[in-house]
Amino acid sequence: MTDQKGPPPQDRRERRVRSSKIGRQLKRLYDDVINEDVPDDFLKLLEEADKKRSSSEKT
Amino acid sequence: MAEQQDHVNGEAFKRELTGLVPQLRAFARNMCGNPAMADDLAQEAMLKAWKSRESYKPGTNLRAWVFTILRNHFYSEQRRAWRSQPLDQEVAESTIMATDDPSAPLEVLALRNALQKLPDEQREAVILVGAGGLAYDEAAAICGCAVGTIKSRVSRGRRSLEEMLNDGSTGFSDDDTVRAGDAFGDIMAEAAALQRTP
Image 1 (cartoon, rainbow over the protein chains, first blue to last red):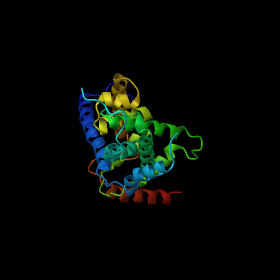
Image 2 (image 1 turned 90 degrees about the vertical axis):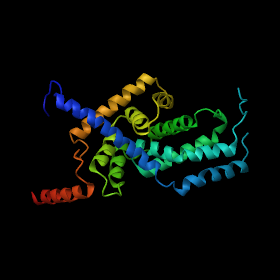
Image 3 (image 1 turned 135 degrees about the vertical axis):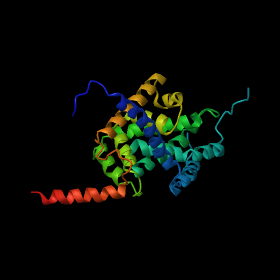
C-alpha cells in the first residue's frame, strides 16, 4: 500500500471518468434485471393471494 | 380537486403492482446479490403490498410505497436469528456463480462484487439513485432519511466502489479489455501453477 498525500492531476481526471463509467455500469446492472423475462411465479402470485383471501374473510 | 377513492381498486392496483415487478426484482437483486434470494424477497414484498393495499393512498407514488415495503422486508430478513450462513458468504458464492454470460466484462463482475461489499445503507442509495435512476427525494422517502443523507451515502458509496475497483480488492482487475472467458483461462492456469508449488 502506498502512502499518498493526494492524487496527482491525472488520477483525478481518471476518477471522474471512472465515476461516470461506474454510473453506466451500475445502470447496466439494474437494467439487465429489468429486461429479464418475469418468472411465472410473479405473475401467478397475486392471483393466488386473491383466491386465498376470498376464502378467509378478514375481521 | 378530484375526489380521492375511499378504498383501493383491487384490479387497478394489481395491474400497477405487476407493472412494478421488473423494478422490484432489479432493486432486490442488487441489494442481495443472490438472484434466488432476491426473487423471494421481491415476491414477499409483493404479497405484503397486496395485503396492505388499503393503506396505500391512490394517486401517490406506488413505486416508492412498494420499494419501502421491499426494503423493510430486506432488513427484517437480515435480522432473523436463524440465518445459518453469514450473508456475505452466501452472497459471494452465488454472485460469482450467477453469471451465465461468459462475454460479460470482468469489470461488471467486479462491480457486482464490490456492490455487495458496501455497507447496506450506501448500497441501497447507490442502487436506487445511481443504478435505478430514482430522484434523491424518492430514494430518501424509501430509505426513511433526509435528502442530504442520501446524497452523502451515494457519493461515499460510489467513491468506495471506485477504490475497490482500482485496488483490485474485488478479486478482478479493472481492465475492460479482459473478458470473463479469457480471464477464466488465466485463473485456471494460475490455479494449476499454484497447485504445482509445494
